[in-house]
Length: 167
Image (cartoon, rainbow, N blue to C red; front, side, top):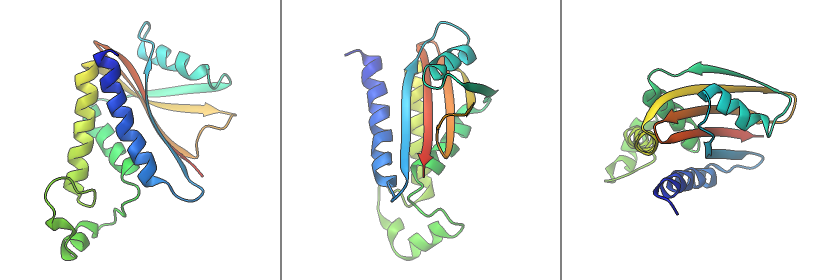
């Protein structure tokens, strides 16, 4: 196994863990990070990857400038959906003792932010990211009820990140 495959597998393993903790009745989460072709422009490589699965689809993209911040915020929303993230949630947790734990604690916004930024840094370390696009797939076929997709291009390859839920 190559170092690239090992590190990509670690990222997918983390996503798989969050699929498990977010599972709800009648909700099926899909969090995937997949290597895609790196031979054309990123938009074309992304289109070629998706059109294999969704031949009757239209793809629209937008360039993500501050990608680590943007992707981190999206990851926080998806991966920690099982945590009620209301306005007073951190204050409530500290009042009831959840904030007293040291180390990683999913119930503290600081820990969630650090985790997702480290996840983004792991993507950057793997690829040496040059370009990131947000991807929107318009298809007549079933895709997801709600989703966020990103494609990453770096010196070491390209990846597609899918975060979605089906009701």
